[in-house]
Image 1 (cartoon, helix red, strand yellow):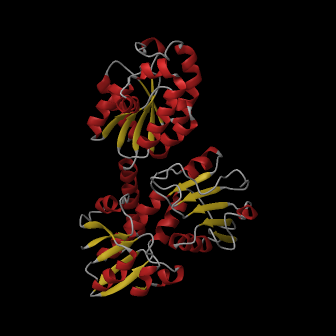
Image 2 (cartoon, helix red, strand yellow):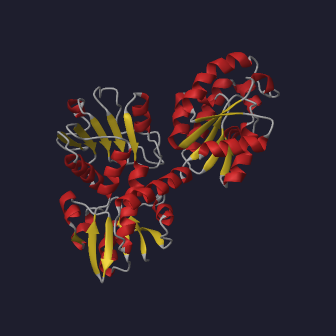
Image 3 (cartoon, helix red, strand yellow):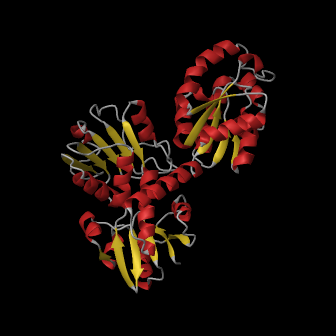
Amino acid sequence: MKYGLIGKTLIHSYSKTIHGFFGNHDYELVEIPPDGVADFLQKADFLGVNVTIPYKETVMSHCVLDDHAQTIGCVNTIVNKNGILYGYNTDYFGFTYMAKLAGISFNGKKVVVLGSGGASKTAACAGRDGGAGEIVVVSRNGENNYGNIDRHADCDVLVNTTPVGMFPGNRNSPLPLAGFKRLSAVIDVVYNPLRTKLLLEAKKLGIATAGGLSMLVAQAYRAHNLFFGIESNEQTDLAIIAEALSRAEKCFSNIVLIGMPGCGKTTTGRELAKVCGREFVDTDKVIEERTGRKIPDIINEDGEGRFRELEKGVIAEVAAQTNQVIATGGGSVLAEENRDALAQNGIVIFLECPLEYLATTGRPLSVDLETLYQRRLPLYKSLCQHTITVSADLADDIRRIQEALQ
C-alpha cells in the first residue's frame, strides 16, 4: 500500500473517493484490528496514511509528532520519511475550515463538546484558539456527562464529536436541543449522513449549523499535501478544497423528487438517473415489490394508515443511501419523519404541475386534488431546494433540473 486510511471499520468511509478528487488513485481503505496496529506501523510498508476511529491516540507513540499533534494529543495523518514515521493532525485545519465556512465563531462563547476522543480534543483546541470563553467536554462517565448536561444548557455552541447519528444510525441524535435556549450554532463532525438528525433539529430552531463533510474534505487535502510534499498556498488551497467539496456534495447526495401524485416523478426520475449515471429508486415500487401488492390494493384493503407505515420504513432505508435519484409518493411529505429522512442526504426538487394535468387513474387518494394540493403545497415548498414546473417536454424538464443542480 502506498497511501490510505487505517481504522477499525471503514466500510462507509468517503476518504478514497475524496482523495481521488485530488488525483491520488493509489489511496486504499485498510481495516486493522486493535491488536494489529503496532505491527502495521512497525512494518511501515506505506508512504502515507490517514488514521481514524479508534486509533488516533494509539498511533502517537509510534510517531515523531509535530507541535500541533503534540499539543492536541492525537494524530490523524502519518507520513513515512525514510522509515521514520511523522505524525500530524490535519483534522484541526479541517475543523476550523468547517466552522469558518459556516460563519461560526467561538470568540467569547461557551462551547460544549460532546465526546472525549481524538475529534473532541481537536474541537476543544480549535475552540481555545478561536477565543472561546469556556469549553466543556461531555462524556458518558466524566465529571460532565449526559446525566447532568442540563447544567450547561447556557452554552452558545454545541459540537458533536461522537459517532451518534452516523450511518446506519441516521435516526439517532446525541441529545435533544429543546433545553438549550442560548444556542447560536451546532457543529457535527459526522459526514454520513450529510445532515444528521441533530443538525436538522438545529435548523428547524433557526440555529446555524455545520456538517462534517467540509471538515473531511479540508483535512484530506491538507493530508494530501503532506503525503506529496506540496507547499501550501492559502488561495490555491481554498480554491481546490471548494471544488472538491462541491464534487463531494454532489457525489454523496441523493436527488429527491417530490410532488403531487401523477406529476411525473417516476418518468422524470428514471430519465434523470440515466442522464446522471445514478441508481433510480421509486419508493412506491419498492413497497409493491416487497409486499407483492399494488399500492391501490394496500390502501383500499388495509387503509391509508398501513400504507403510510410501510412508506416510512422504505423511505428511511432508501434515503440513508447516497448517489441515487429517488421518486417519492405524493403524500410522503406528510410525515415529519419522512421529510427528515429525505433531507439528510437529499437535494430535493419539487415537480410542480397544474392540477388539471395530473394523472388520477388508479390513485385512490387523488379524489379531491384541490384539497390535497392545498394541504401539501406548504410542505413541498419548505422541503425543496428547487422548484421545476413540469412541461410536456421531458428533455427540457431534465435540462432545467440539471441547470438547477449546478
